[in-house]
Image (cartoon, rainbow, N blue to C red; front, side, top):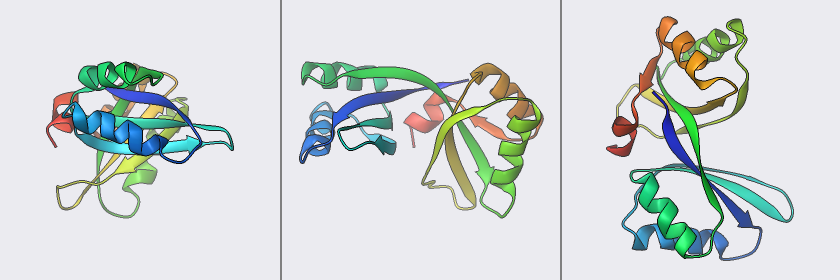
Length: 143
C-alpha cells in the first residue's frame, strides 16, 4: 500500500521553509519525514505528514503550490546490507527508483526509507516477495 507525500514548490529565499512549517503547525499537522531538492532559484520540498489532506488544504490556503504523490514506505533492518538488498530487489525486477530518502525510526534496530518508483505497485510486490516490510500509511502517520 502506498502513502501520500506532499510535494511543495518552494522559492529559494530566506523564510520560505519557516512559512511552510508554520502553516503546517498552525493546522496541527505533524511532520514524519522531510527532504528537499533545490536549484539556485527554487526547490521541491517533499514531506510525509500525519494528516496529508489537512496539510494540503492549509498550505494552499497560505498560497503554496502543493501536490500529493504516491510513495512507498519500506522498513528494513538497521544492519549492513539490508538497504542494498532492498534496492537490488527493485533492480532485479526492472523497477527504477525516481528518488528516495530515509527517516528516523523510533523502533530500535529498524530503518525506514521512502521510495518513489516508476511503478509503485510492482515495487511493492517485488519488495514484499523479497522479504521487505512495506508499511501501510497509518503506521507512518501514527509514528
